[in-house]
Structure formats: structure tokens, C-alpha cells
Image (cartoon, rainbow, N blue to C red; front, side, top):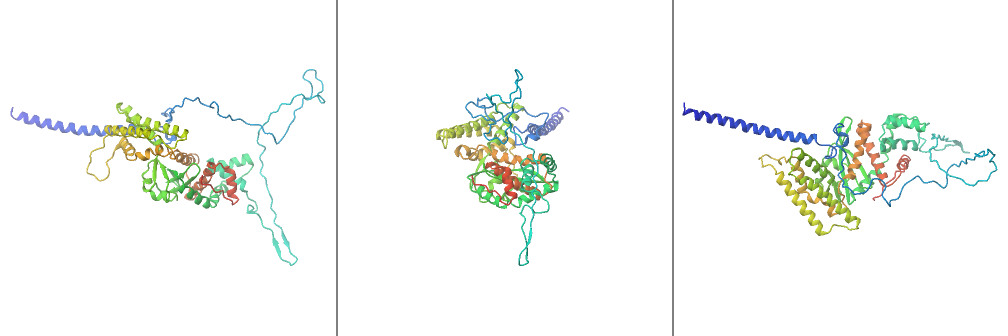
Length: 480
């Protein structure tokens, strides 16, 4: 009995050890899952690329900007020009208000001396009324007996029809202001006395798109020749299916197109990236690596991801991991140095300053890898999963030149906000007016939106360029 007891005990111990090891694996898996779920729950529009509309209204984070304090007070700054409604020297109407009797003695003031005249101007809209022009085409008989009929202008395409002015305003409301069709019809009726149907409104955008082929070609060529261009994409519902809207833009140009995905073949449909030789600024989507161009990565994305990591480490009690916040601070510091150099009319940072920034950058990358070492090889094909921190570290490490492109080339911005502002309008359209019912409708909207966005960037009046469009004289953009 005494001799068999140790063998039995050893077997029990081994069994318990196996159970403990198995539970340790389960606990490790559960901890990883809890960490991933906490990170997912902790994401919001401030620390990720999620839109503000996705934030939980009951746990919405307090406003917090990634910008640094400048020390200036809100509002108008000392020395900056003010803005007010300036009086006009040539008012359209003049009304003189004459006192009838003296406020003191009650005497008649009809022939009294004018000793002072105070002036106030009221800027207001007159009553807007639709103007109807009747066109009559006469038929005349020549001495030879032949009958000849005069030609109607192009605008008079039917017995009764709306002109370019109404079409321009309606299209402006639909595309620039994202007003749904039914509400545009209501607005035109209330404000202008124009009772249009939603069916007539639905035909405006395809009609406008038919005039924009030349505009699209010119815009694509200008974007191809741009030294720096921004690229982004977002999902959109078209006919109940998920499609992708891509944008290529600069400070003066915008071009949208629809595609089935986010790959290179989808990006090619925009007609800009094939043949583009400038610097492509984007958020790091691997699609853009298929093009043989220099890249600039969006550091606004990096700041949000670094903030998310900092918050995750704080939730987990890992306060000793400080590299994410330090890296965010460094990127902001470099951006401030670049702005200061630009303000002083410098074209680059001082070489010694650039070297110091790069050394600090490499040191923080090394700290990050020590805190988040890559997993050991598993023998499986493909790259092992690095996790949120590892994936960000890999991008910051491998693509350092692209991350810091804004510091070595002052023509490259710190972020991709230009493309994000342009693509955000597509999200606004989807949120207000809902998804597009057809692919043709989506394409027509994107064509007109490209036209209006570019016109606004080049300081052209939206209604004027739309009126030009509907009268057959499409406005074309300049390169800058």
C-alpha cells in the first residue's frame, strides 16, 4: 500500500497539472478576448476612424481635440479685420420719414428746416415670383409661296417647361445641400411658387451628368498632374447593396467615382491613379501600394490610434507603457516645428533638427516593440497576427518615410483631412437622404457633386455654374 501510494499521487498530480495548464490556456484566451472587446467598446470618433454618428449617445465622450492649445482667446483676435454688414452707397429704394408735427408745441413741420438726417439701411429679400416668358415662333409665307417657321430657343423644349434657373436652384438643393426630393419640391413651392413634381426633380441629375463628360476629363487630367493629391473611400448603399465611393482631390479639385470594392481595379476606375506621378496622401490602405508613387500617410489617423492604445493601457493598468502617448506628442511637436519653419518662409527643417526628430522616432519604435513583441512563428502560411498595437507599430516602423513625409517635403500635409472632408459629404448625403435607389442615380449624383465641390474650391458661385451647365456652357476648372 505504502509503495503504490506515491505512484497514485504522482498520477493525480500530473492530472491536476494538465487541468491547470488547460485552464491557463483558456484564461489567456479569455483575457485576450476581454481585451479585444474592451478595445472595441472603447472606440469612438475621438480615438478611431469611426464617424461621430456611430457614437453611443448615452456614453458619448466629452469633446477633446487632438490640437494643442495656442494660448489665444476664442473669437476675433486682436489686429484681425472685423466683419459687419456694410451700408451701400446706391440703395435700391429710398424712403424719407418726415415728422408731421412738433413734439414740443404741436406746430406744423411741413416747411420747417431740416437740420439733421439719420440713415439706416435694411437688407431684405423682395417677394420672389416666378417669371414666365412666352415664346412665339411665327410662320411666314415668302413671295415664292414657301413657308418658313422661326426657331424656338433651346430652353423652350415643350409647350410649358421650367428654365435653367429653376433647374439650377433645384440641383443645388439636391446635391450641394443634400435636401431630399420631396422637401426640395416643397421648398420650391413655398419660396418661389414653383410647383414641381418629384419626377421632374429626379430627371435633373441624369440631365446634368450628360453635360459633364468634358468636365470629368479635365478634372482627371489636372489631378494626374498634381504634385500632391489626396485619396480616400467610404461605403455607400446603392440599390440595397454595398458599394464604395472613391475620391481623388486637392485643395482646388474634387473627383468622385463609384466602384464595387476598394482594390486597385476599383481605384483605377476613377481615372486618376493610373498615370499619377505625384505624392499620394492616404490613410494607409494597402491598395495604394500597388502604384509606383511616393506616399504620405495620414497622421490624424495615427494620433487617433495612438490615443486608443493609451486609453486601452490605462484601462488595463499598464501605466508603464508610455510609448503611444510619447509618439503622439512627438508627431505633434514635429508638425509644430514644420508650421514654424513655413511661417518663417523656410522650405525645410534644419538638418540637425530633422536628425533629432528621427532619432527620437526610432527610439519610440524600439520601445513599442519591447512592449509588444511580435508573436513567434507558427509555421503557418501568411503573416502572423500582430494585434492592434503590433499592426500600428509595423506601419510606423516600415513606412517611417511616409509617416514623416510632411517633415521632409513641406508640400505634403500632416494629414489626409482634405480627402476626409470631401468624402464626409457622401456620408452626410446618405444620412440625410438615404441610400441611392439605382447605380445610374448614384453616378449622376457623384458627377454633379464633383462639379459643385470643384467650383466651390475655385471660388465660383454654385448657382452660376449650374445655370451654365443647364444652358449648355459647362464651366471647366483650372489646374490650380
